[in-house]
Length: 192
Ligand SMILES: O=C(O)CCC(=O)C(=O)O
Image 1 (cartoon, helix red, strand yellow):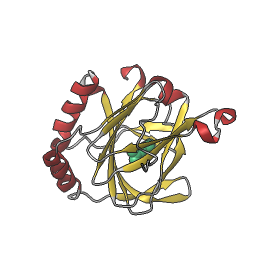
Image 2 (cartoon, rainbow, N blue to C red; image 1 turned 90 degrees about the horizontal axis):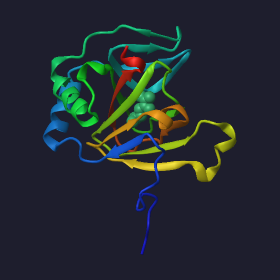
Image 3 (spheres, helix red, strand yellow; image 1 turned 45 degrees about the vertical axis):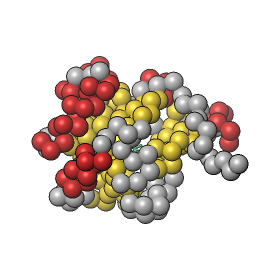
């Protein structure tokens, strides 16, 4: 029998939750059509321009100024999704302070990182394509080859990262084979 990397469910770090089929196909199509009405911009990180395109609503993190900045309100077509996420995570919808749309063209990645300090729960929803999502310990000495976890994050799925998975683990995505949208929602620490 052939087994692939993803046949065996990986053991995920405490605080990392994954659920497939969070969205229906109809919800996914509606969201893709909605996103395509907007103009996404290349992601800039200090002097570097990444291959992915982004659009942020609500409170964003300025890498250059290392602080939260206020952005535009979240458009009404995405409100049903905020309600659905809040119900899933058992949080108040007002706690969702940031909504980031990321388009990954073919071959694009997000490199190893932990999320910015003011954020608490990071929620990720995938549209249009699956992705190879990777996790590894933040501490250098623990970053052995066998410590890296590979998770197939399917389109229409949800993952959320909090507690130990947020504080002590880094994540990244492998180059995508198909254009993928990632919807990232973030709550703030202390419900600021
Ligand atoms: O594409 C993804 O699911 C990862 C998104 C992410 O890590 C981020 O926006 O910080």
